[in-house]
Image: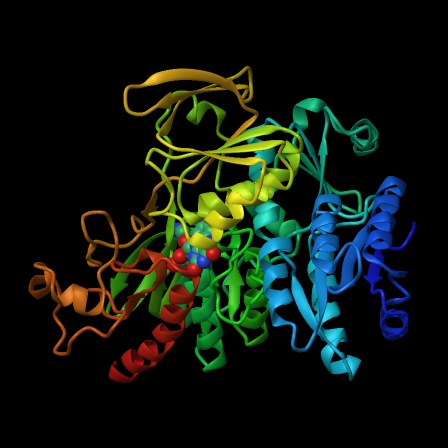
Length: 553
Ligand SMILES: Cc1cc2nc3c(=O)[nH]c(=O)nc-3n(C[C@H](O)[C@H](O)[C@H](O)COP(=O)(O)OP(=O)(O)OC[C@H]3O[C@@H](n4cnc5c(N)ncnc54)[C@H](O)[C@@H]3O)c2cc1C
């Protein structure tokens, strides 16, 4: 099999030679390192690689070249190889070019010249980019393969579980991929047994539950202690931050999640406003780093594991799991965030997983290459989803009920969307009906006000509307507002029920709920900021409060 390629481009022969010289000993065994003396040659090389079907892992290009400049090379890279990592090489003083490249070519990193010593300034950057590229792909013929029907909700469920848990796999659509027949024959699979997950060692799981997949992948599924200092329910940014701080500060810490680490942020194709990531960071990259950090520091993590209820007895919190088991802890953090609200339009529920997806843009985008897709919602999550889908789809139609998206979407996203020719924002438009034989084929939209109906062909509908807090698993002792957001600290003290419920001699701690020793952080909390950074901040803060609480008891 041919090696994946690292392409480097620079019109200065000395810089180009130095780059190849430094990269070759470190990466030459696993990657082919190809040099291009101009932007035109770099684009030509990528086109040739594509025709040959070779994998392109990384492009490092100088910005200032005559003819096609670095930013344009990286824009073309995105079109030709959407998954390839893109690094711009700039002069130390050329920060403007770097900023432009971040905005226009969505680069993954910028590297200043000179990069000496490479051990400190070049290899860490290249390692990180290649690790991220590798994590998102599997070699064509080996590894985990999922075979099934594109329009099967069961297939979508497994795809979503694998993708959300950052497990690389190859999707094989029985109707499209020629190797499906051979794989099914070799694994002794009948069509009625699909979807099926085929492992490298020949083992097969037919239509498995997420827990069975996790078990087969060797993930931890049982708690190892009878009593924890801190159990964190929900492994989004708030929960992950609490796990990092809890474990690093010596607390016996367990983190559980019903679906996958990363939470809503994990499904984000690019988080642009998280401090310290000037080129943005994808939700999966951020999650991968956070999970590694939490586990390296000693936090236990169990996924998938759903907490169904909690009882509190003499200060001990007994968590009842959805499978009936129990975990006991001295303190607990509720960081179960929010989930999308179901869309009420006719036909949406029937097509869930068969062309209708809730926020699953990164999981399903590639399946809609060259197709026409609809995005419902005007918030940042819808904007990011539309941008990601636009890499694959022929056209993306984003519908909102309002006059525009200025009040609901960040300016940087609006700017990006305006510069993306295959995304169309359609204002004053509502989804009325979804139809199709077994999968989405047609959608009826209504123009507001008035309600003129229009039927249009669409292959998929991605829903990013309204969210609701996931707090129904908490016990009645934990006070919530009308919508279900959990009251903590001062907000709790301001509530009417406070005097009746709070029996301690002290005031509640800042992120403590009305049940002593039960904390809440992130989007589930009343007054939350709904940002990755604020969720991380609150999750980190909770650990300090846990210490205070434990010192009191
Ligand atoms: C697509 C998208 C893009 C976004 N982009 C940005 C951005 O660019 N910048 C930004 O600042 N913010 C962004 N946000 C918002 C940000 O992601 C959220 O504010 C943040 O994730 C909230 O973190 P959290 O930890 O409170 O909860 P969540 O991220 O919602 O995580 C909650 C976790 O709890 C788990 N859970 C729920 N119930 C249970 C249960 N009973 N048992 C066990 N586990 C359970 C869920 O599976 C989930 O993993 C985006 C959100 C979305 C959806």
